[in-house]
Length: 259
Image (cartoon, rainbow, N blue to C red; front, side, top):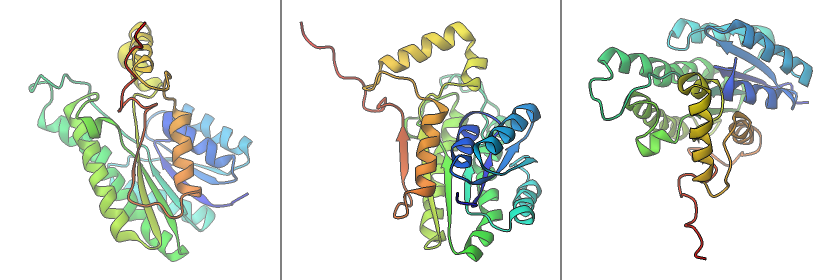
């Protein structure tokens, strides 16, 4: 059992929750962060404790610097150390990429405040504590949309591309004590897409996605969490890497075999 401490933003559901549960099963203490959905965050905290880890609930908006500093301070007050940060909190506004009037400047700024400024502020809040402890690992949850210019909107794709670039800067400048890496999921099953698409379209779109991949499967939050946990616990010589977890969608399925 590690007894180490990880702050995972946006860990009330989805990728953040799955990452929290996997680390807790390895004996980690987890700061469960949420902005709105208190009930689901409480359920994740309870599950982490059942897995053998500790849990600290923290309602905070990562776009607010004071909230980020408070989250780090609460972790230090409870456990006296911060060993890992997973920036999983994110937002978007669904909009057709071809419709340049579908987003306003304020829409862009809102997405950037959460998806780019938030991880920057969280990193700034934890780095002094990680360096004081002699080591640390940061994993930023980006998106395959950042590499392809696709996804829920132009604002979302470009915010995740900015997160990738910022992560490379962190990796270069926060070493040797702190490693920074990025995980880029493809379309991940879960609440976000289900609520946007509705059940019927969700099933159709994710079936089509799975059929377009070499592995013929969907990507789950647990798949992404496994990559996150490896980057934190098992990748001591890895920093500055952008890892795509997409069942091979980026390279595409093989062509149909000739009969």
